[in-house]
Length: 75
Picture 1 (cartoon, rainbow, N blue to C red):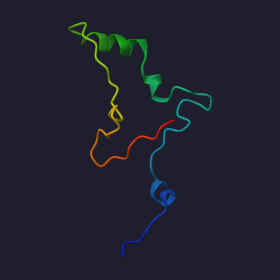
Picture 2 (picture 1 turned 90 degrees about the vertical axis):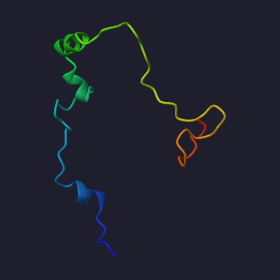
Picture 3 (picture 1 turned 30 degrees about the horizontal axis):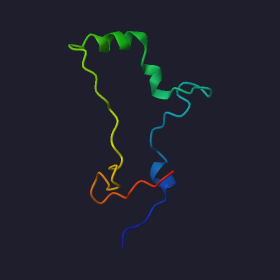
Picture 4 (picture 1 turned 180 degrees about the vertical axis):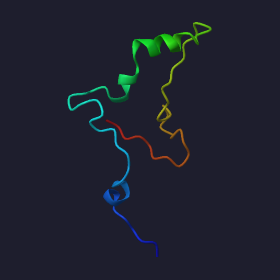
């Protein structure tokens, strides 16, 4: 039987970004999104098409989108 380890043991030497931008930071990796980075990204725009990045969690009829996935619970 395989030896079982706690999550704490498995993550003990894992890298962490906690505190990278200071104790009061609320943006995290969004700190990388500087005005210069926004301009760099805008240079790649070739059309004005807009599309959503959201993903449907459940079918309106109640069937899960991913076979085998649990149904979302009602709020």
